[in-house]
Length: 184
Image 1 (tube, rainbow, N blue to C red):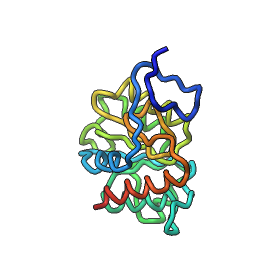
Image 2: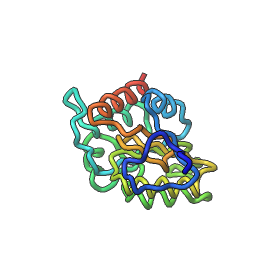
Image 3: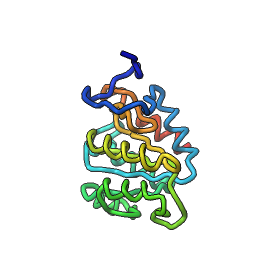
Image 4: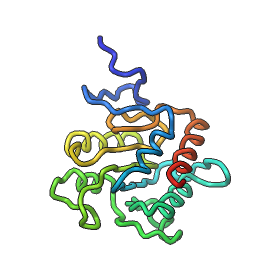
């Protein structure tokens, strides 16, 4: 048997085929990618968004800061839409992640603003198995124009880049480092 990865997916039954994403051990790599993105799109779900990541902030608070500072368009699922609106951020859409990814994979879709495809689709606070399916769709149908990044703490083999399987405290530090680098 040929070993493709040095790291195994968080879910051991996740077998993704010959094309696999890159697990990132140094969070600054993901931070630099997002910082250099020309047309990023952030999709925020309702899973573990209320986790305390330090300094009295939740994961969602950190994502809100990022969106405000960098003006990244955000798609909020129904679980978190109210929070964004309460913090004076108007999501470009409030819809399910599967609906958004379906649009991202459509080569004729020109984005929520009509200016073209998003180069990086960043998914955060989403259930593992749902992220897996969304990144799989992107890997097969939008690989020519969009790449995917997961900000959650588990290795997603279908994402172009994601954090390696981090322990909770490692992930909290990593997500803080990523956002800090992007906001510099």
